[in-house]
Length: 387
Image (cartoon, rainbow, N blue to C red):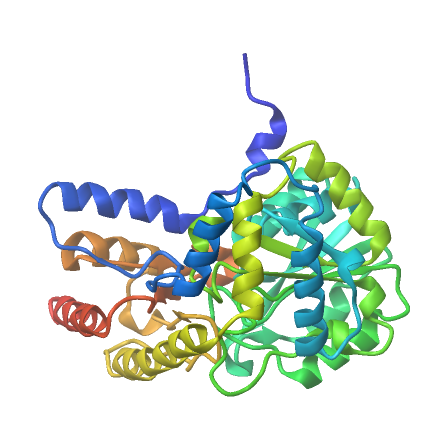
């Protein structure tokens, strides 16, 4: 038997591949500093854990609605309406196990052979994978370092065709930490408002911002009904292992996503949804403290990167990633990432793990202790000194 041809269109996440290599080195007794995995190194807030324990004790261990518990969808709708300045209700919300189904399912529901979908590059590898799996053509738009890793709007405009059916936006962005400025989002909206196109706005890092707020395209006139907002609990509340995300979209698309959901995962775990209500409606002090700590680490770590020979690092405005330009080192970024792991004991990702336009960059996750970040900088500095 052979695998179906579509399997050749699916990319893997480089972070997990590097993690396997790093763990193998650790098993040999090597000291490795993990800056490859993108997840908060904080505990889930205590009141959220307590609510999950309470929900388990109360019997929230059975099937629930595929679309999500009504109480949680109501909380999400209220939160999204408040933070984006829009008006949505529970009927617009789909709760899913993690954020990825809100990439996969809408693409499955909307894209067909011959369609085109625009997405950011470097960007989350799943965008390109799922566009290809759906039979559509991925159209990468390079993110420009000099523009804070926003689109070149001239390139974006030139890439729009009659076949463009979806546009993926991600702000704050993985892997660059960039935020698309409001004026750029307004320009994008003006270009597509009268087109038959849907926007997938990946806002999973929306709360992880360090000053400038991330602006949602759904907030602009005429864009709410053609925008899918992707958000979730993993990054904001350090709940990566809980597997709970959500999408906010037009009810006609909710129906399609529910159909795919009931045929794949049936429903998101009921007790985790009860904990999700506590996360959104409860105290935010632990979540806010986490963001403040990420900003502190960002300031110190990026300053250190910019002091390394051959490194040039834009100061990220959101998420917890640094994406330095390392062309000045004189080694291909892929080779540099491998040597940093094997020779310096620092696990990071080559920028091409996020697409062709990531060549010449490295991605570091600063979701690690300040002590480890400083040690990583010292190890990189010593390694560069041997070149």
